[in-house]
Image 1 (cartoon, rainbow, N blue to C red):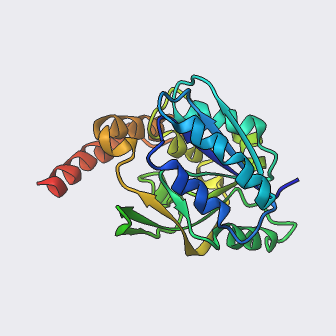
Image 2 (cartoon, one colour; image 1 turned 120 degrees about the vertical axis):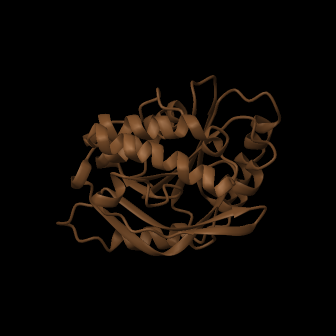
Length: 251
């Protein structure tokens, strides 16, 4: 059984997917699993996925994929969770890439966790890039006081203990943008995290949350109230503050 499973959700990802899969094939270890869940793409995405079956086989890496309609990224990720066999699971965007020592570094950090210590999430630093040019370092440190107000860590490439999903459930597919934040809010201050102090992935700018900013703010507001236990006053204050910051940044 592989220690790690990487889940990728795709939909019409023909322009970026090969680069993402190449970054997984370039990893320094092979005892992990890659699962691709495609939402019935209309372009060449499934042809690309199929062409990589032999490449993963040659590398000795377990590779699974399905293509069928879904209701969005969180529905796709849930399908991936249902077939994942790794004890630790990550979610990588179809336009994001791992650095070549990423999985080896995660695996080492996970294996060094004492047997009597519970860790739900191992996360790292991520470079936010646009056309391979770094825009921002996503290098926050998780604390409940910060996290209940904003997503202060990078979810891209973070590995979740399978026990976490057994305890707190899967993603809520009614969310379309901020379902990862909502899920990680559920444990509140009981979320046990471990930071891997290195950069493991490049996150490409231009994701769905950047194109639907207003909806992202609304979902974040809802997640804070329903799953994070944040008061109405605080959640609404954060909601308006986010709009002001976004306006000033773009202005």
